[in-house]
Every structure is written in structure tokens, then in C-alpha cells.
Amino acid sequence: MKKWIKVLGSLLIVLSLLSACTPKVEKTPVTVATMLDAEGNILGQIIILMLEDADIPTVDKTSFGTPDILRAALENDEVDLVVDYTGSGQYYHPEDATDPTIWNDPVKGYELTEKLDREKKDLLWLTPAPANNTESIAVRRDFAEANNLVTMADLAAYINAGSSFKLIAAAGFVENPMGLLGYEDAYGFKLTNDQLVVLSSGNTAEMLVALSEGTDGINASLVYGTDGALDELNLVVLEDPEHVPPVYLPAPVVRKAILDEYPEIRELLKPVFESLTLETLQTLNAKVAYDGLSALAVAKAYLIDNGYIDE
Image (cartoon, rainbow, N blue to C red):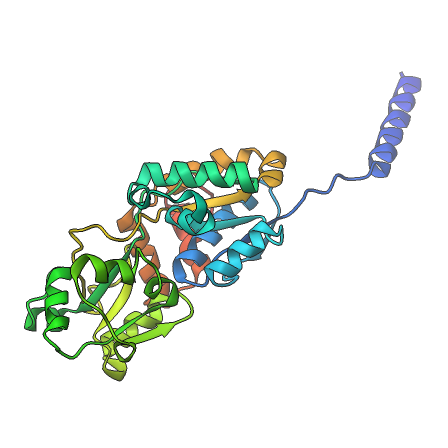
């Protein structure tokens, strides 16, 4: 018996030494990057927390840059997984965006963007959130009530009457045929340069504060569908019966090489993004943009409260 114990002990020692000598397989870290706004940071932290919880290493590049910078980094393999919006497919593949109405359909817009990126760029769009972060125009509530503004048609009549007006918006919206240019064509008005304050980025938190405070005579602002705390700032969104802007559903977009290595990412993120309704994102965004909480704290609390990760 003692002999067998010694043999077993020797075997255990040998196995231990072999294990120590076997090189560990290092996992490829997934670089997660987002745009600069509160929503991008929240969704980026949600993704990072979900991946880390599944033992997938990550590199945090949230708040990476403007949409064009983020997209270029993804196409050049500088980052691996980003948060993007389905309607942006019209810009990435303009040669295929021959039917502009397709981007106003949440299903068709997603399917075309997913197909073109997969076939041409080796970029894979995962399940989007059911929250349309479309581009609209907001005004102060008292301003709307004083001038009977409910729809974009009402605003067009107000502008065409020569009344004082100044809009703050991102350059991408101002120059977009399905953004401000589309609104102007659909409702029959035209803004002059003096009626515009144009910012390089689409961070609407800054814009909405300027609108709320009436900075530099601003009485209208670009607003996204998932912007939070509009009521707290006493702002209202003007209705768009012509449905001018495209549908923008937030979704993870990942390089094919990364998804090939970690195929579980697709199903890992699917239920979380499916849970992110318009109202949910508005609430989460408000906690960061207006309550001052960190994106990490908001993301972690949401995942814990909804049972996606443990405390």
C-alpha cells in the first residue's frame, strides 16, 4: 500500500510539473469602442460587463470619438466591437442606398445594413435594441405653447413668417438630405447660416442644455429619440408626420475575426439588447447625462437588477 501511495504521489508531482510547464493560451482581448455620447458609453459598458462576466477579456475604448472616427477605426481593425445605428448604413454604402425609403423601415434598414457590411466589410451586426434613436427637432415647452407649435409643419409656418429662430445641431444632421435638408424640403422652409449653430459632434446633452437655457438666442435643437430627461428640461419634440429621418436602432457591430473566435458573443448580447426599449434607454441616458452618474455605474446596476450578471 505504501508503495502505491508513493507511486501516486510521484505521478501527481509529475502532472503538476507538466501543467506548470504547459504554456497558457492567451485569449485575444476584445477592444470595445463607442461614440462620445451618454448612450454610447452606457451601451459600451453593458457590452464590456457582459463579456467580462463570460470570461472574455476586453479593452475599454468607450467614448472613442465621433461617428466617422469610430467607423474608420472599426474598418481599419483598430477596434473590434462598436455600438452603431442601423440607419447609418446609408452613409457606409451610398452606392447601394438607391431607395431612401428603406432606411425608414426598422427591419429592412437593419437587414440591408447587415447584408452590405457582412459581404463587403467582414463586419457583423448583432441583434439591435428596439429603440428608434431617430433625429428630431425639440423646442422649449413655453416656446411651443406660445407659438402653437406641435408639428414640423407648424414650425415651418413660424419660420416662414420671419419670426426669430435659431437651431443648434450636429453637422451630420444639418448636411443630411434625410436630416435638416429633408425637413426643409418636406415642410417648405429654409434656414440661413445666421439661424444655425452647427457642432461637429452629435452630443445632444450640450445642445439641449443650450436650448433649455436659451443660450445665444437658441430656441430649437436636434434631439434623438432616446434622449432622456426632456420633461425635466421642459422640452418637447415636434411631430414629424412625413417621417423624414431614417430609423436608427442601436446595435453591436463586431469584426468577423472576433466573432469567429468568440461566437458566443452573439447570443450573450442578444437578450440584453432586446430588453433596451425606447423608454428604458431614455431612463438610463438621463441618469448619466442629467443626474451625473457614471456610465459604468448605470450599466452595472441595470445588468444586476435585470439578472444578467451577479453583484
